[in-house]
Image (cartoon, rainbow, N blue to C red; front, side):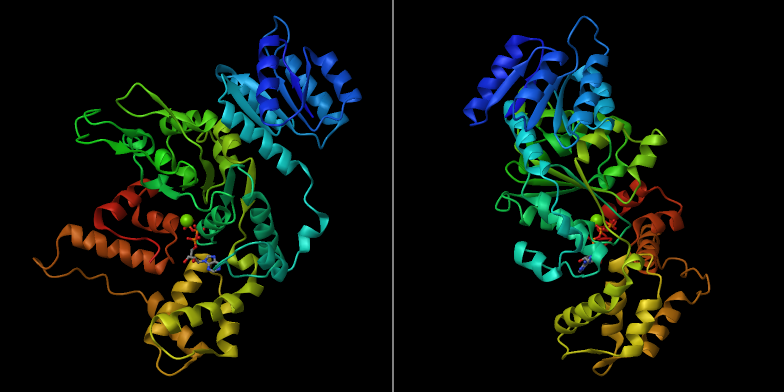
Length: 456
Ligand SMILES: Nc1ncnc2c1ncn2[C@@H]1O[C@H](COP(=O)(O)OP(=O)(O)OP(=O)(O)O)[C@@H](O)[C@H]1O
Ligand SMILES: [Mg+2]
């Protein structure tokens, strides 16, 4: 049963009707005292509560009620309803244990989804999930190319699998090359939306001027360069999942615009006055520490709470060294086949050498190392000596010489230097940007300009 707490009877009436149509029973309370009485006498599974119950509009009463509920029934999910203008209050509530928040006026479908998601996630994860075996996870989920059996990695996969069936927004953290995108794809593949679109947007490559037209679309003539209608990414993702990659790179203006659409899944197409509504599940990823970015004033706290209903952090490869042999053998097979070689054997001393490396570029760097070794290797064995030689060749400082005049344009040199750094840093974009003295956004613009795929 769902407890609706709001002093406006028209609100509780329309909410209980909406829930009834969805087969959900509800009871109502007009103020905090009544709410606590209902909690004591009814089997409440979730609370949907307003923040103000008198002329005091500070939200203090709402926060107090929330704290009291959290004290009495810590496991009970509470969803807050706040006015758009007082979203800071919702953030306060999230810190004090609210599970989610919606803003008034609400979008019915989105509100129902939030309720159903909170109910699905409410049961505590089974205790054994902490050390569930790889075989069990393979039985439950379709994990595809996600290799690994380190307990830390498996608990990440178990969490991703468990939330994949819900509509909860998921924020995936972890260093560059740890597999964030693979996990995002796995969440979509194991969700009821799997037959819908999976739309990936790299926000590091979207400039603030183009953000709206890219995400929400535009109609012909909306601005000078808009020669035809264009569907936005949210529109394309309708019925599926949108993957917001590099979310930590968004500038302040774009953060507000994104918050708006995440609030109720509606947006306006640039140049048209009509509002569009979409059904989209949001998964995002970043290699930044967003909590630290919030503390530094670079990232909106309300947006963070909108994105991280569930947050997943992928371990760095050095935190799960026991997976290195497994991954290395997997990549040997993959590239052995890809380059038309017979089965390739990874020697024991090669495995030991790989296990001792620090891998700042994580799984991606390991994969690229094996690929290069497979490319230059003769015979069907990969030995530690080969790997050592390769890494020494790469690390050797070259004479800083310039090509002869007339041989290369600046653009060509720029492209070559970017590619060289990508190879050197195992496609770790942050490190490449730093080495080239560029911001990540500026580096992404150059990837676009030169058609460089940073992952290859
Ligand atoms: N567990 C894994 N099993 C197999 N391959 C993996 C695994 N994790 C990562 N990879 C491979 O490593 C490469 C990088 O993975 P991915 O693109 O998902 O990383 P990322 O965390 O999104 O990195 P970035 O922050 O740089 O975008 C890909 O080629 C991917 O296939
Ligand atoms: Mg990625």
